[in-house]
Length: 209
Image (cartoon, rainbow, N blue to C red; front, side, top):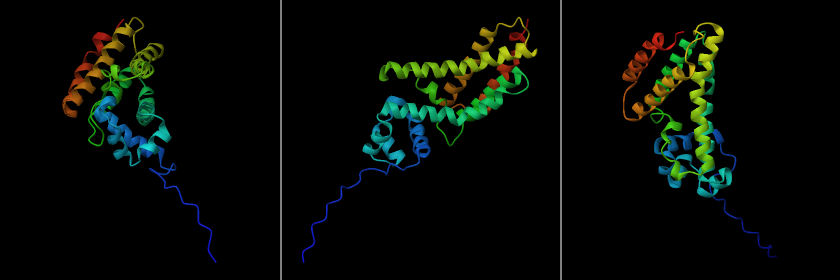
């Protein structure tokens, strides 16, 4: 007796949808962090993530959507550490802690150097207006950490009420950006930490009534 022909199976393409999202986002984050948004090709991303293009598009929709997800993953990795630093007893300790932590993150050998968000600052022409706006908001939120901690210092009494919060926050936020650029250029952690020490030496001149 002849058996009825079996229905041919459609071959699966790419990695199953059950892949570990955090794992593949971590790989994508590394590619974007190292090469930037425009410089990261789809072949770079699929090779690093270990998934085929159809699976990537099915899971994330587009390169830009993947980049957004990788950015969120990047922020989430550092969120808890930043929260703890912001809760240190004084504004001086917190601001120095933010800068020292930046040195640690920007100069780690298991990650690309510098800051992933700052690294794409000059790529606006390759991005949608919405993505450019999102990156601008992320940078502003990072800068706001310095302002918020100084305002809390005024409330707590460890920062004089007459301090120009905006100017002091801008100074330390600029130092933070400079650490990223310097690390990206190959400056080592020892030199970066020396820069932080110099920046904090200016505290008594900046934070005063």
